[in-house]
Length: 140
Image (cartoon, rainbow, N blue to C red):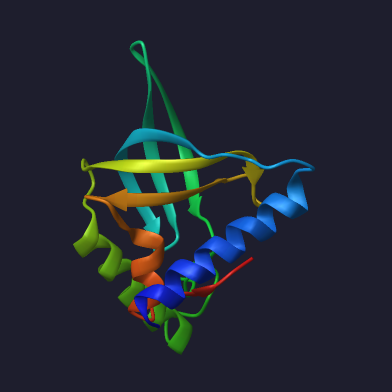
């Protein structure tokens, strides 16, 4: 997927979530988050700095992308192999202990209760990179 196409797809998916979950426009909140665990390519555990010496540890789901699964699938399946490759891609992009920019859409949780977010490392969107490098599909 091309960069412009990935950016447009993320923007459309975020707009779709806004329309689905809120009667008004939702603006994202921007935070710094410390990577605690990379669960899989589209799920990350972060400790988010709220300022004033306050922080919150949560599990986040990358908005608008769906990466292949590594849980609840057979380890000899193609999906598992693709999921492992996607996770390794993410692990090259971010490491446990790294600080990342977290763009959170307040009030938007997905079906498992995870907060939806977009992650940026030095201004580069991890969500977009997963799409550009064919490690995820558009979701939402």
